[in-house]
Length: 107
Image (cartoon, rainbow, N blue to C red; front, side):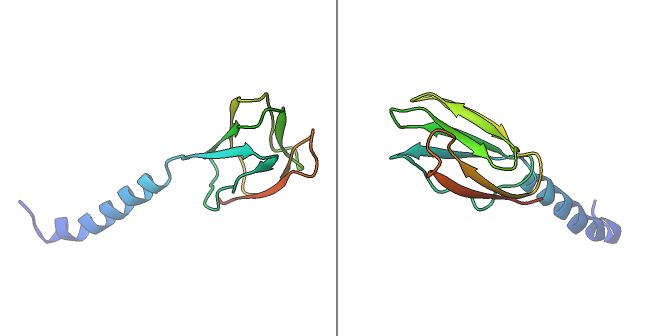
């Protein structure tokens, strides 16, 4: 049976539950095709995963200039990077330095 106290506690409990649902890690897929990184996610958060997919017929990397990650991808390969810290990462390919992108990771 609901009483006045239950009705006061219920909104707080729902808010906590909603916050937990949003904090679940997500997987963001980023394709590399045509010698370029497709659009990187704008809503990436610490704990999320980037799945890099090399759709080109040549080898690529997804390398953060700050050393946060370095993924080497054979043609047709997939690899995952877990985002460990907030900040902006300049991403490039070690084999093709003109291939660049920017990834912002939020807390």
